Figure (cartoon, rainbow, N blue to C red):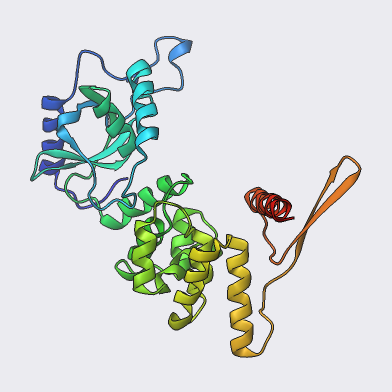
Amino acid sequence: MKLSGVPRNSAEAALAAASRTFQTAAPLPFESGPASDSSQAGRERLKGAFAIAVSRIRPDPKQPRREFDAEELKGLAASVLERGVKQPLRVWYVQEEDVYQIVSGERRYRAALAAGMETVPCLVEDAPGVLPRKEILVDQIVENWQRADLKPFELSDALAELRNQHGLSQDDIARLTGKPKSEISRLLSIQRVAPAIQQEARGDQTGRLSRRHLVAVAQLPTEQQEKLVEKIRTGHLSATETEREAANWRQRRTGQAARGVRSTVRRYLVGAATVQITFRKREVTDDDVLDVLERVKTMIVRDGEQG
């Protein structure tokens, strides 16, 4: 990421700090200069690649991810202890504080700390002190979006910052992140969830209020949202059932059938039987199917106990 208008002395300050901080005895395996034989052809030194002391690195306090799974970090730390950090962190030099702030790779940084490593490989952005928040945030969103355990509001809040504070449209965000505009729209919609429900969802450790639950809740007026969430709490509604409830509420309010609610049929041949599941929506995942089958199993067991 290169930005114009960076004073030369700022860049030199970053390199000077690097020379004080980075290991030189064991540089990363990037070579410069002309190729001496065929094995050297097509490769050159990667600019900004260094091993940096972990004591000189700090996390970004504004990054989208706010929670890290302790067991996952424990496993990653064991891997780092055994094999080292294989993928460099991306950092930028904060000249006025003489530290390197993480752009991406905080999980690797935390694992390296837990493993007791003194240095970690890093790629240093060449814009010391002026790296724009917007560009950092886009990079962090793209990296974090790949991980399924990111909580709904962690991602939604980051997208809302791009929209509200940096003036990006949904089309802009879709282009920068490579994600469908429809998915971005759904994530942004949960900003309309009532504040009390948002507070509950942000602190939810059970996963009961999933992203799909919240998108469905956001489609209702504020006064109806709490009623639906109460049904989720007491009835343990699945995401599919919550979407159906929201569609039914909209239909009763407008007197018109909900638009965009289409049926999807999944059929499975199991021995001499055919199992058919009809979903009242267009997109169906394997998790949706497993959720329905688990609930059917629960109902059969319960009916058998009562009978």
